[in-house]
Amino acid sequence: MTEINETTLNELVSRVLDDLGGALSVPLVRIGDALGLYRTLKAVGPVKADELADASGCAPRYVREWLAAQAASGYVHHERGLFSLTPEQAFVFAEPDSAVNLVGAFDIAAAMVENQPKVQSAFKTGRGVAWGDQAGCMFCAVARLFRPGYINSLVQDWLPALHGVIDRLETGAKVADVGCGHGLSTILLAQAFPNSRFVGYDFHAGSIAAAIAHAQAHGLTNLHFEVGRAQDFDGGDFDLITCFDCLHDMGDPKAAAAHIRKALKKGGVWMVVEPTAGDTLEENINPVGRLYYSASTMICVPTSLAQETGLALGAQAGERRLAEVIRSGGFTHIRRAAQTPLNMVLEAT
Image (cartoon, rainbow, N blue to C red; front, top):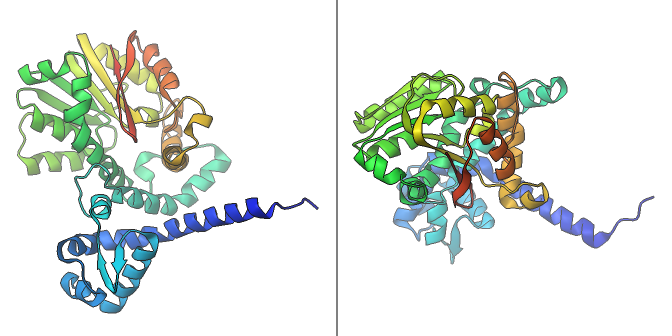
């Protein structure tokens, strides 16, 4: 019989218990967000549990238990019978535009669990699970997760890190946002640079419908959205083409790279925003890599395998592998222009 190292075993059990606590927190965080409990607590705290229940219009017994679970998780502050959000807790759970609002990740986790039967079946067949067949509103959850990063980094840091792009955008450039999803990135660009023209492409018709609705709600007239695949979308002569967290999801990113190269005018720039990753598994054994590998198993790889070619780069492909794909399309200069804990920005010309 194999001898068990009790210290090592206890450390593993402790980690698994911690993980289970996080997993079981997923529906509670989503309830707190959906019912406005975090937002209300930020506004009225410190308060007793029954006072939060009254302020939020919820049943006191449920709120008391919810608050106890949140305090045990460290998501809510508790002291002498009063509950509140510290500034840091509010930044994560109650401020939608903060750079580290992570509520969208809990929505993704819920969709991943719902999607398990489809992906589990694909493990045996080797086939994919199409983006449009993902369980729940995966598209909404992904858009919500990446939105804070785009709001806080795209115009302020990422675009200025590209050579000469800001000047073109301010003067008036023609821009394509390929794989735009719900169009949040496209809308931010159009708002920041009213003299430029923008078009967002995505192969998922439902996402394009949502993007059109978002653009109309913002009253923007310098952008439009079209259903189109990265490897054959209409249009050309673009000064800038962007791909936000989508290249690794494509079935044939090499064909996409080649088409994007043809669609750029001479001297044009391709900005590729991808999940932060090292080039080896060892470099990615960390909290961010853990999240991305898990999401990649359930979302990114099945999505790619459901498309033609099915290269399945995965969310932790790394800069070296991504650069190989980009170069295959005819790009000769690639550099990492910027980085955040969750994303890296590559400039290709």
